Image 1 (spheres, rainbow, N blue to C red):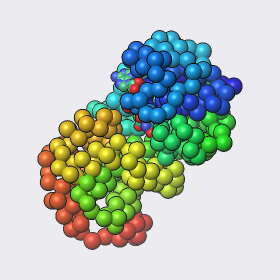
Image 2 (image 1 turned 180 degrees about the vertical axis):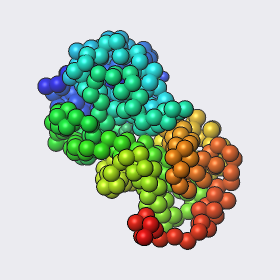
Image 3 (image 1 turned 90 degrees about the horizontal axis):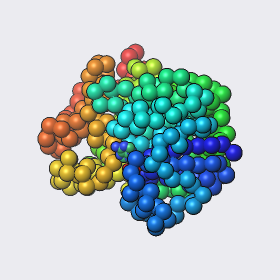
Length: 334
Ligand SMILES: NC(=O)c1ccc[n+]([C@@H]2O[C@H](COP(=O)([O-])OP(=O)(O)OC[C@H]3O[C@@H](n4cnc5c(N)ncnc54)[C@H](O)[C@@H]3O)[C@@H](O)[C@H]2O)c1
């Protein structure tokens, strides 16, 4: 049995809490918002985040962040925009031997840092890992078979996370490539937004397949330039998470994209859907690509649609009429 505190009582935090509680771990969920906890205590669920899923009564719920003290593992389940502020608040209570497991997907606005880099600044003495992969909260919470991967610079800690979180319905693989796992998990949201736009426009399966395969190619290009392994992008945190996000109505990024494709203003679409991390990630990824001199044509066009009012039709035309090239980078280079 492990002692685990989950920061964030959103869909994913709660789904992991249920999964860990079912596996017999000692689970506490921290929320910044008393009303989320009151709602769960009153109704047994949090309909706004995880409709139709009952939250185990054995899970401890609190707004007291000192509940992160003395735990084997603290899982960060907060949207990426708020990860730094929550981690700074938690830092005074976290023991040095607690493993921090990041599940937030995105890049920090301004610094363009990955979430585990942000967390390392907040918890300099702790081991920081990432847990990522195709794992819709709605399905994890219902015990639908799911596979994810964990990556960490400390192999022993990664093995501990794997052993602790794996069970009959949740299978955790270890991967040594922290950068690749994080970049794949974060930037798939950009491509999912674009896939939603195409769905909203009523374009076809060919277009979606093109976006996904050319999308993972440009994500990998950026990731490799940052030090990631090419192979990671063919795995759970890369193409795996991209498939689940581009094809499912559970994806808020895809749902926001569909609204945009149907003509809703991008900012309004994001307001209507809620947590749409692909929106800010598009800007951050585009800024990072420019800073690093990496070509990311889909991300660039989506950024123009989302933030500069570019007409979607023009962006698609531009993508389709780029100079002819070979499909893979190695052929291109040779
Ligand atoms: N939902 C999924 O299927 C899923 C799967 C894998 C990873 N993730 C990642 O997990 C993270 C959380 O996603 P989610 O789906 O649970 O989000 P959510 O929108 O369902 O919930 C967000 C929760 O975060 C907390 N929160 C919001 N604003 C906050 C603030 N300012 N300060 C402190 N806490 C705040 C609240 O408890 C809120 O309920 C994201 O980074 C997401 O990419 C989600």
